[in-house]
View 1 (spheres, rainbow, N blue to C red):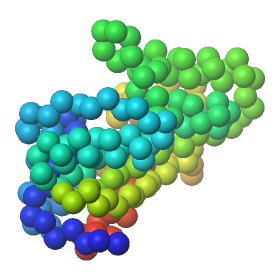
View 2 (view 1 turned 180 degrees about the horizontal axis):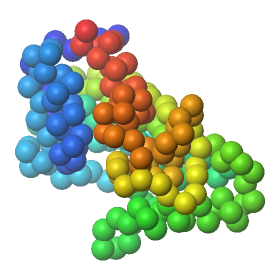
View 3 (view 1 turned 30 degrees about the horizontal axis):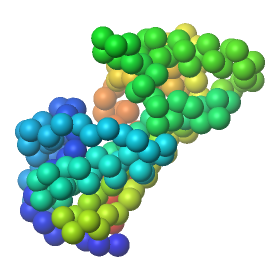
View 4 (view 1 turned 90 degrees about the vertical axis):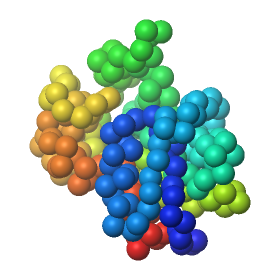
Length: 202
């Protein structure tokens, strides 16, 4: 496991929330964090059928464009009774041509489960894969998995994406009903980031 000793890190995301979260998490280690939008980078086309492959595509594109070490992530929800779908196509299920509609995506997911006559509990996992890549092309991979189940109807207006229909294992609330602090203490991304910090930064 390679330790991260550089002072600057580019996070390959255009999501301001993710960027702010990474800045806060890495501040104690003296790492200056920048985002893809600040660097003027376009989002690369994701052509892999797995989270690691797509995270590597994003990391390598940003690293080659800037010469900086890069952190990229790919994440999604995998539903057992749907063979792991939507998985890497989680965001695609929300595409409308005029932007993403996650209300539509949640309905599509539930309809697919109904069509499959999937028994309860309808188990699923949120998965996050982080790829930390150095300018020489070396990378380290960190993964986080949050098990739970799909519920209906959607509950809660917090979070984003599929959060209102995902109830984490051991909890009565959906991610959409949890405060940001509560969600961030147990989420798939929080688990992956904690593993990365422990292995590469601490």
